[in-house]
Image (cartoon, rainbow, N blue to C red; front, side, top):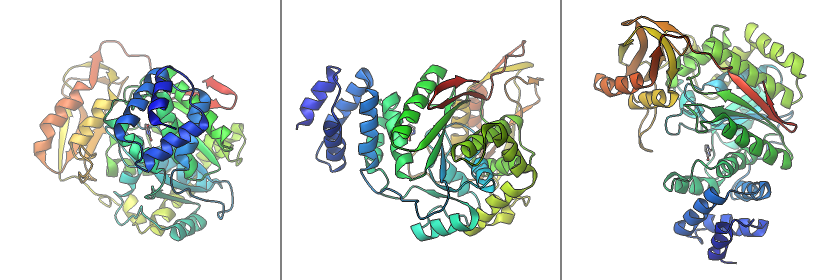
Length: 440
Ligand code: URA
């Protein structure tokens, strides 16, 4: 078999066979296929697409390219959750403890921030002492003790995705549905959970800007997961506006704790309860009609917050820091951003807000950048709200005031104002499962 012939075949729009995809993925991981040939193949895939079978074969070949986690020694249904990435998306910090409090088992690997989007591992590392790198034994022990553990991805999980993602990043081949679907699902399958809930974001702060495109991605990922023998569903959720009011690592931990105390913002609370309920349904802990009530109860009776604190303690962190004033890292400097005009906020570009928080030090511009855990943005007013000129629109947090001017400019460029109150979208737009897409 020759990679040249496979590129030619895909260029003509023909379907690759399973052994051909295995040859291509295996050869690339072993450095037998050079980047330039794989880059040509990726671009051909972007133009010609992949059939559902090809996407499934690609996912399986990637899943098997490295270590695969065996969670079977842990009793119960293990449920995972994955977000395609958004701004202010701290839902994992809320839904994993809720699911665990309701009897599900969450033994989860999460990622770091990517581009303008945040990552759960960066947020957890904002908690003083918290360790995101545990060996297998300790990981299992924490799950047994507390019902949940969240750690960073182990070194050799899906090496094919590490190489392919880096190549896609520099060859303009990231935004291709079958490539995204196989990238995400290979990692989720290798991480070993029985049930997987996907949170597919759509809107200005998401990788999938359009709703139809998000639905297609969700459908493909659900189909791949079900074909691989897992229980999989997806919710399509709105990401035109950042979730909640806080963007930045410690700020988001603080807001996640507020949701677990029943004091969080409505949009974030609504999305978290929907996701948690869906996780409970997937792993058979509740029927759909009662799942949301169960999730809400776990917040109301404090059991979900207790689970988060138990995990933090078991992973070396200070649970008291979650609620103590000043317990989490705080930025040295703060600047209020006044509204430039009077009117309704008619739209926010969530991606620009994510980028403003990166400029303040909450995310990385280069791989090796250190994070400032206290940095970020507090959004005091969001889409649909009325503001008076000069009123505080947002507060910026950073370690160095020299970072404020560029971030403020970027932040203000994200807002549109008008005289009419805009129509607000639902937070959860659709559910995707084995029956197809249900618009809510
Ligand atoms: N997240 C991933 O893990 N992979 C992609 O291709 C896009 C987003």
